[in-house]
Amino acid sequence: MPSNFKLPTRFGRSGFGGCYAPETLMTPLLELEEAFVAAMGDPEFLHALNSELHDFVGRPTALTSAPRLAEAVGLENLYLKREDQCLTGAHKINNAIAQVLLAKRMGKKEIIAETGAGQHGVATATACARLGLNCTVYMGEVDMERQQLNVFRMRMLGAKVEAVESGQGTLKEAVNAALRAWAARCDVAHYVLGSALGPHPFPTIVRTFQTVIGDEAREQILKRHGSLPDAVIACVGGGSNSSGLIKPFLNDSLRRVVVEAGGHGTQLGEHAARIGGGRIGVLHGCRTFLLQNEVGHTAETASVSAGLDYPAIGPELAAWFDDGLIDVWRASDDEALAAAQELCALEGILPALESSHALARLRDLARDGARTVLLGLSGRGDKDSPTYRSRLEI
Image (cartoon, rainbow, N blue to C red; front, side, top):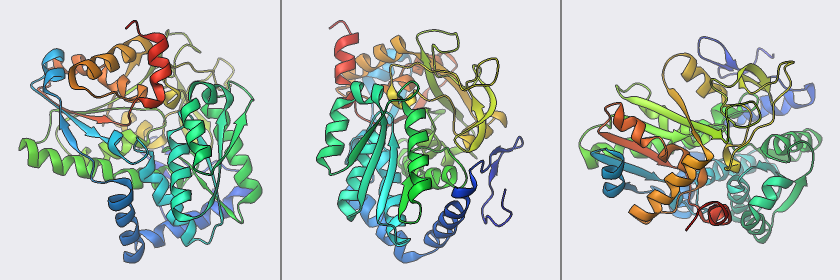
């Protein structure tokens, strides 16, 4: 690994993360880190970013009390950090608009992205339309079928959507394709990675741009509730939403929980729960907890939620778990579906299937003694309406 990276490349006592990248990507990764460090120290860039987040994205998002759901699950207070209120319907736009601004600062003319549930693809296409860059999004063919609305939205926003037919046709294959495309065009293109994973410096960049969620939520709940919650909880796929929410609470005396996709079973290939179900390995440029078979090959995953259907967890989150800073739970497909229906019926909010995994574990927090909980509602459920319609008996 090059010794001239400026930022730490590893997380935690076990050294998660790193930069396991082909030689063709080392120069653009070094250039990206240099540009990121310079931009974060530039008041003009930060002003432009904050202006876009406030005026275009719609920040700050609300902190909404959910009293009827709180009573139903046994809590005294439940607060939802409403990333579903962002312009594109999810938290992904926070990172997308920031990285596209950074790409323009670097002189790039094209943007490459991957997407699973489609929300990152929509967010990146939106940012490119706003800022005037060409956009190509790689998406697994299976995810394209279950997220047809988001595919249409990306194309309407002017993006080219490339179907990835290899493997399972989900997020892992989309990342593979995007990385290959970037390696071939890194002189003119920037890869807007959507989650807090991949080779250094992507995990740090994405989490930094998503920390606006937790910064806002911490200030809002102190003002609204008068104290910090007993617990903070969020769903976790790669980790952009959960790391962004949790980072500002790491030094506080409270419980921090992330919820993985438990799928439809406990056997390898029936879920996407990397903690407990996986072991340490390397995927897409970083060392982290990874679902692998007995010979070390990346295992297939299963989840009703396209955004959580990924075989590895972000390396910084892996380090937080390994260092005892967070608890990692799982929720099954059926539990997530039921939790979504409950929130919708009791509070009038239709959540994304990803967020519904966190909603499914609220009763467990109440049984463990939590009275006040802050939950990251990462996105709205419009994109998941076909799945809800087919899976719920209403």
